[in-house]
Length: 100
Image (cartoon, rainbow, N blue to C red; front, side, top):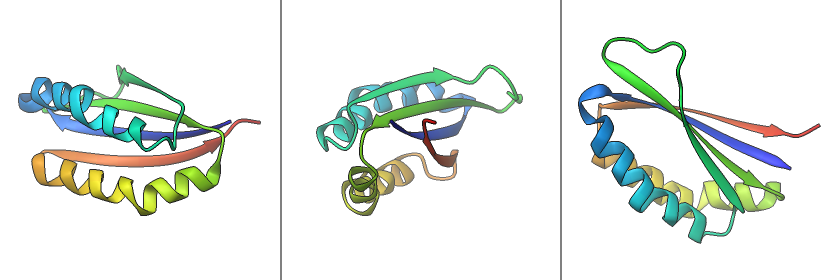
């Protein structure tokens, strides 16, 4: 089992708008690629500062090839859409993990 974790920090002023967009558009688009068979989204409760809030989006896959294909193709397009929509109002940190 592979876990592709994306932690996103967003400005508090756009949190509701960002979360709605992610849940209604971004996550369904990611799941349509079939690179992942499940996802979970969590609000990070530690390390919060006054101006931003963070979320961890966890995508689960059984294939490194599917993840690499996603990152090099559909994922690039979706990341660009996210950047354009929330320009200078977010930061992203990605991690790929393997269950042992």
